[in-house]
Length: 188
Image (cartoon, rainbow, N blue to C red; front, side, top):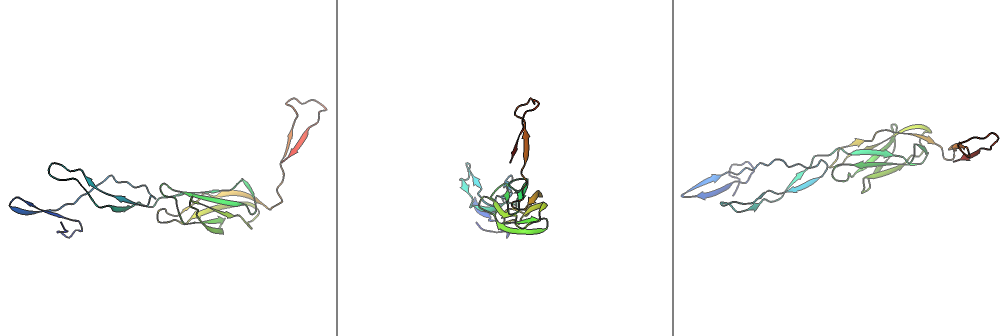
């Protein structure tokens, strides 16, 4: 055995009868598919043998999956938040859990860059942001298994701490309203 033709592939020389011949072995396989973002996988070729040749298994070779495209989701605890509320980004992929970091933005201003947890999540406080309607986003910077990706915009109304307005709800005591009956108000 050896690389007789210089192509980087091992060739096999065997004695067949009264002469020696060179049998160049090139094996091509197809149908091997790796999930994008699944990292490096070990692959072996196995031959079950026949009446002329014994069974054999090749040494393992490493195949690297292509980088996957992750999904970046940005969440807030409510549609209207108070300045200083945490925003959480989650990065998911089709194979391994994404690693690396996420940069959080309020419009074009950077709120911070945070390392992802082992579950693919990161949080930052929406501190000192403009009051009113804000457009937040999270940008995943990518790793060896996943390309960079950005979350869709998360539009939130931001209020100052201690300035939230209570909701007032008026409910009748029954579905039938009788003249002169009292109503009760409830604030939340």
